[in-house]
Image 1 (cartoon, rainbow, N blue to C red):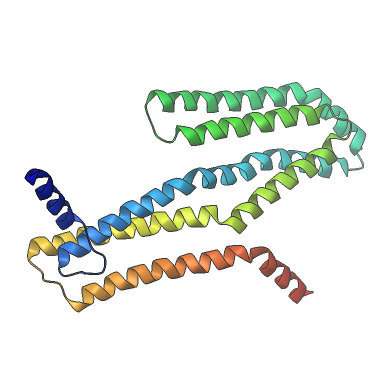
Image 2: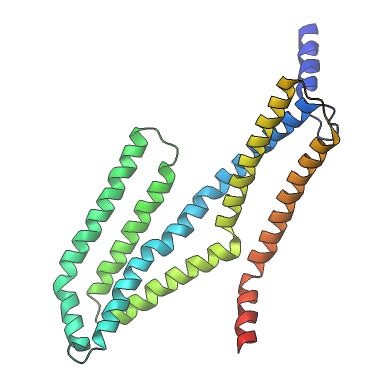
Length: 242
């Protein structure tokens, strides 16, 4: 019983009270704790950031292809009928190239699993996105109005994914957490070095720590407000120019 009480008392001493910073070691513990917390938040937003950055990348391949086909059809020497016939002739070659691309993604996915890497989840989503683009591309190539349908479909997907990421702020949040996590890590190393050198806690250390958390909260607030009113802000700019 006495051993349990001693362990509880020891754990209490090891816990850091954020309201009482009395020495450099307390600042080091605070920065380590902040670093781990921000790393956890960055991990929670990493997958969504990866998905919404890959969707426009993959969909833009189909968008560029059909846009070039449409521009080519405007030529008097070629015309829409010639372009449509050309699409039917090369569809097998194009689908083969897409299959090769998906095969490379699958191979990379398998290698990452075998190597035990933690980012295999992102590669799995890349594989799914690649297969989705491949299936829709295959269906569009045999469609009568493939060029118009491809432009509408891939243009909508590209634009929508970009707007969702910009409005909900997945990429900005992930990058903010990674940035401040690295800053917290560097500050923890600096404070630990101060402790080893015998430097005592001074007011400038407290101010530096307070400035760090103030910048973290202010950046989060500005990003949240900016992302929430992104569409409204773009509309106001367009109306202002008009």
